[in-house]
Amino acid sequence: MNGSMLQGSWRIMTVMGIPIRVHFSWLIIFGLITWSLSAYYFPAAAPDLPVASYWLRGAIAALLLFVSVALHELAHSYVALRYNLVIESITVFIFGGVAQMKGEPPTPKAEFRIALAGPLSSLILSGIFFLLYAATVSPGIRPLYSYLARINFVLALFNLIPGFPMDGGRVLRSVLWKRGKDYLRATRQASGIGQKIALFFIFFGLFSLFSGFTAGMWMMVIGWFLYVAAQMSSQQANLQASLAGVKVKDVMVKDMVTINPSITLDEAVNGYFLRYGFGGFPIFQEGRFLGFVTLKEVKDIPREDWGKVTVSEVLVPHDRKWEVSPDSDILKALEVMITEDKGRIAVAENGKVVGLITRNGIARYMQLMER
Image 1 (cartoon, rainbow, N blue to C red):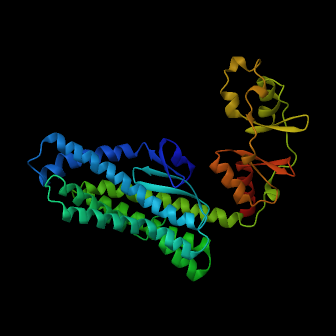
Image 2 (image 1 turned 120 degrees about the horizontal axis):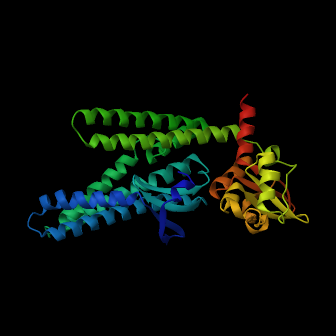
Image 3 (image 1 turned 90 degrees about the vertical axis):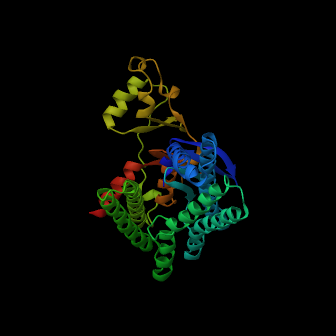
């Protein structure tokens, strides 16, 4: 998962310094689970209760499932933190949860432990809810504990399927990584297996659908999601392999076309954007770097005001977290651009901006190297 997962999500709390977020798609699952448990499961398991209590128990079960998924991801995060990896956030969404980890595990052993922590936590939760089920005599509460025990057990087993990027796929990658001593090759192999498993889900779901089992539609959706995730992981591994060892100075633009902040947007559009065809330009004033102006900032201003508004009024001020050094790995620059959602960032040396690097520039470099 990338930064796009944060779009359409809300931060609800912070645990261990990690923001916990809820994606809007999870509300769909919350509604479906609450409805199905209230309309079918609880009435069958405890037929003598009032209708309102079924809906209350359904909502509680859905909320506790959310907590279970969050704890699953927190278990991954706890182990990752012990290996000094940064967890930017945990997001719960329609297909479960994802911990956005900055960087990769340092060793196969670390990968193995981080991957297994989630399913192990789900198994522990399943055992806890089973013990509560066994110790409870109330006919209205026992079905709740029974459901949570079973759903956490299923959550653990499902995540252990060896299809990358699921937990089982990460365990598989750790084994392949240790055996072959090649992290990127192990990632490509695990991703390939993940794509095959995803295709099995899709075709089996299609077969089930034609056989009259409506659950086949869910299998197809899950299979599609896993296939896309595995494909993205494979592409990321190929990208890392292609850019391994490449430095920012090998790709950066040294002869920058700069804009004076005092000119109007009309002048900037006609004299720079249309003339050079770039999507953005660095802004300098008396040798001091101020920031960037891009087409986005220009388009935010009504066309009739371009002659009155100056570049200084719309430019995005520079922040040092949006810069890299010439000797940084190109992958670090790309990570900054993706994390900060920037199309271009400054290259600074000894406190002075000496160039810039863009996503398009990296893409062009890769195309040239592939020839």
